[in-house]
Structures are given as C-alpha cells and as structure tokens.
Length: 292
Image (cartoon, rainbow, N blue to C red; front, side, top):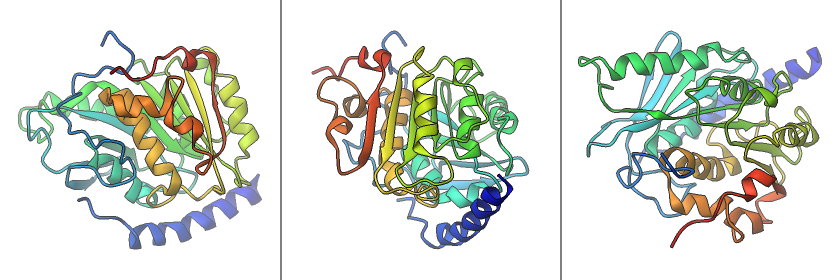
C-alpha cells in the first residue's frame, strides 16, 4: 500500500501541472425534480462543453469555492457540490473539472485537505454555505439552493463522497474511482459509481463491488473505456460529460440528463465507445425515462 500511495502521489503532482496549464475557459415530489429547473439555463445534451456561466474561484483556508461569477443573475438559486480530493491532492489538481461544473450553474465547495476520507471538511462546506446564504452581507445571500446537494470526489475523495452521503443534507453521491475505506450500506442516496478500465490503483472490480453493495438505493456503474487512475485529473477527461449529466439531473431536474441514465432507451446504455462496462441496478431500472 505505501508503494501504491507514493506512485499515486507522484502521478498527481505531475497531473497538477498539466491541470493548471490546460484549464478551459469559464466561458420535490418526483425523482430529480428541483426548484431551479427551468431557471438555470438548459444546455441540451452538450454536457462536455462549458455551461452558460462565467466562473470565479475563491481560495480560502479550509475550502476552495468554484461558483458562477454572477450568482442568481436571473433570480435562480445554485445547487451545491461538495468535493473530496485524492490522496495527497488539493482542489487545484481538479480545477478544470470543478470550474466546468460551476459553469453549469453549481457552487462547488472543494475541501482543501489532501486526506479527505472521513469527509469532515467536505460536510463543513455545507455549513459554510448555509451561513453565507443567510448572511445579507454575503455575495451568496439567498442564492444557494441548499435543498439540492451532491457529494463527489476522486480516489480517496471518492470514498469520502460516499462517506459524506451519510449526511441527510446530501441528495446524491458521485464517487469517481473510489478508494476502499467506505461502506455503501450507510448511505441512502442515488449513486453513480465511475471506474476506469485500466485503473491499476483502484481496480474496476473493487468499484463494481461497491456498486453491487448498493442494491438498497438507485445505483449506476460506468467503467470508462481506456481510463487509468489519473484520467479524471484536470478537466475530467471522459468522466466530465457523464458526471455533469448526472449532477444536472439530480440537482436541477434536467429531463435531457434523465434520458442519459434512465428509461429503456437511455443514452449512456448504448454508448459502447465511452464505456467498457455499464450496469444499472433494480432500483435504477425503476426510475422512468424522460417525459414528453
């Protein structure tokens, strides 16, 4: 395990440089319903391209916040993503991916810790945003959608995304190549597990075991073709579009995004170019496809 950790840390340090150099421009009753649906602009199905918002980044002591520059510009409120880093990493390693999500209308509270497994700092990000949303002197005042929150992360942070989902304020989890120090039985939110076909650090079989242990919630498993453990670093690579679609459905009620995951003709179900493995469990199969 020490050798594996050191190899991962070395790769992450190299990837951090690449991430900085390649950062893109920041150009209720029914499952997935959200109060911001129809207010945060639709992007059709172009999940991999930047969204309609310019992005600002606020680096603070405990968190780095990625957010739309002009929050609430049309009276909308912005859902929240709490983020956990991989071992030895900081949010800057993933800056382009987190900026991408912010460009789609989300506020990302990324914990600055390189040891995120217990999700303490991640969950504290919700506390900070709750306080600022209620503070009339804050730029976040009245602009945060605290009813729609996702936990997400990579590697150790992927395990932390599951651990953070024990918080009742979290509505969905997005573990990317998650490490083993977690227990899916403790969470009760819909979850999208992402693995890499060529990941030699977190083997796809380990991620699939977590997926199979999540039969008590709607769970989807996607294995990205050709992806190694560091393929989600920087702009997210082939992980970027499907993660954005998942977040837009569960946090914004985006019907276009629903159609990528649910219903008999789901878009990702037949995308063999992207996936080397794809599964939906029984509870996910019960979620209907888009209406209309």
